[in-house]
Image (cartoon, one colour):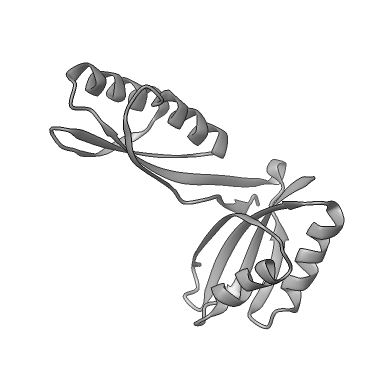
Length: 159
């Protein structure tokens, strides 16, 4: 089984996300990660989709995507020739002053940014490769994690 990261340019129209993701669900393909946003041209959106499967299945996914009317192009983002990352927001309980100091030390060590602080909690923001995000979450395993959200992978091919 192989994992694939696809960068899909689509027309920025109503329902394009449903039609594109529907292709995966109709055929029983699992989407591990999905992120979508406008490009430099507001009429075009870029979808970054992570899926896994056998080589034949992954090839079939690309062929089926290219048949969709709204799809402009599909490109595989290969690790050596692309940059991929995610965004994480993590809210932890830091009511204890020692926990607050520890959270600040982790943030400094990992280049995370503190984006909100209250007397009881701290929210941190981190961007990076999935392994870095996983490691960061693991660094907070001794904390009470109150909320956590990840954007999913997004990326671009290198020049």
